[in-house]
Image (cartoon, rainbow, N blue to C red; front, side, top):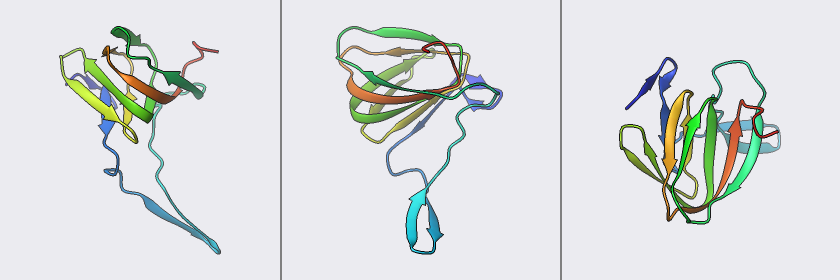
Length: 120
């Protein structure tokens, strides 16, 4: 696995593997968990991405980004050839610089957050 100064270049969390913490404030009771995404200063940009299953898509991340699989599934291959199957509820964190290929057949609705203005 390619390394980044802040940890692995791609972090992958299977649904249910992140320990949730209680948030109790009087009548309010919920669970939360903050996960650091960006390691450098910059804007936080959110986006939605619908994959249609057609063709591989190779991308060079020049910025940090997290991608949450809201629905469906996505298969991502890293530069070392490791493949990750992301399904509903799974989370990817990409730490720049890193390259990844989103494989054909992936059919998913992804929610994205990054520290890039590239899409604005």
